Image (cartoon, rainbow, N blue to C red; front, side, top):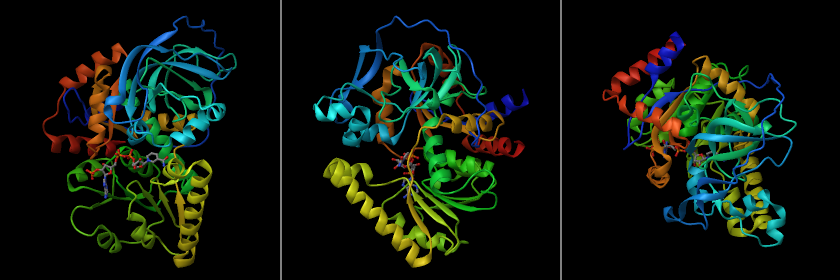
Length: 435
Ligand SMILES: NC(=O)c1ccc[n+]([C@@H]2O[C@H](COP(=O)([O-])OP(=O)(O)OC[C@H]3O[C@@H](n4cnc5c(N)ncnc54)[C@H](OP(=O)(O)O)[C@@H]3O)[C@@H](O)[C@H]2O)c1
């Protein structure tokens, strides 16, 4: 009860039209305790569902609402069908709407469609889901119909801006009990990205992160706000770059040191600090020109950037040419990093991982990670949600309510508007201290 109250008080709302802003959280770990059930749900009879689709790549005008898209079915014994309660948007949705990654993703979806020149449309975007299991394949044991789950939806699968989505059992995790669907939908994609980048690529984990110095560039966005909390839960020392007006937010989430990149040369400011063990770069551009020099030399320190040219190269040069080009680029930069001061240069990628989300779920329920929902839109306003995303300057996540039940909950949230931001940030800090 105390924890619930603490989390409620930590909610950080800054509304944009019907939008609400909340702060929630996640956690870490690697092992999963597989709770097994026998699924006995009846097959679904509904053949069509409502969704936002695109029939071609382009700007916001290509988004189309329909109630006649074919509903997904259970095709494999390990499939799990989820009724979507809430979804969220990521920069990738905006990029995919414009055709980013289309060549590789089309191949990943269906290799035969490339050979037969078949269309990938209609495509459904949306990379996060929080919802309820409605059907399972015969071999699914970890979840059962009726379970509340959350997951990130790989970009090669049909997305969550729809009534139903089907994922594999491995991709699905039990939703944190303390979060609403709106709050839960803000976490899975950024959590899977952060964990993949920090653990698989950056070499950090719960047991090794303590006292490591980590720099996060772009700390005020979706990946940044999650990563700060995860790293603090692991005991790391976290430095963040962000705009001046996001300082309160990132400090509230636990950032130890904050550098305002709008107040002069950010590299110069960071050079005055002790060197870092890991840098997670969510900004890209010329950041890598100066960031590698901020790492501890010859100590296994790693620079991991999330802004990579891989898919862009494949889009512009073709799958083979693009892969070769990206591989050569990565190889050259990695060699340069090692030769110049013994640091590792790496590219980080999102990877679907239900067991990792199980650990995040436990961190959320123990009060160590809070969700950060900046804006919330009803399902009727998906184009407006994309416009919000396009404006940039994210402070956490933009969430879309898909199912009716959560619309009511969202309205209640929207009525609890906080006007005193300073007070809210103080509440967040106090909550994190208590936990
Ligand atoms: N490789 C992968 O698999 C993968 C997966 C997920 C995300 N990504 C990429 O990683 C990046 C971050 O993702 P996200 O979801 O966190 O994006 P996001 O939610 O849009 O956040 C980006 C944040 O960076 C801030 N920012 C912009 N320019 C900055 C600068 N020069 N220095 C410091 N902060 C700056 C923005 O706020 P202000 O503009 O107000 O400062 C915003 O808060 C995106 O480029 C995304 O495409 C890659």
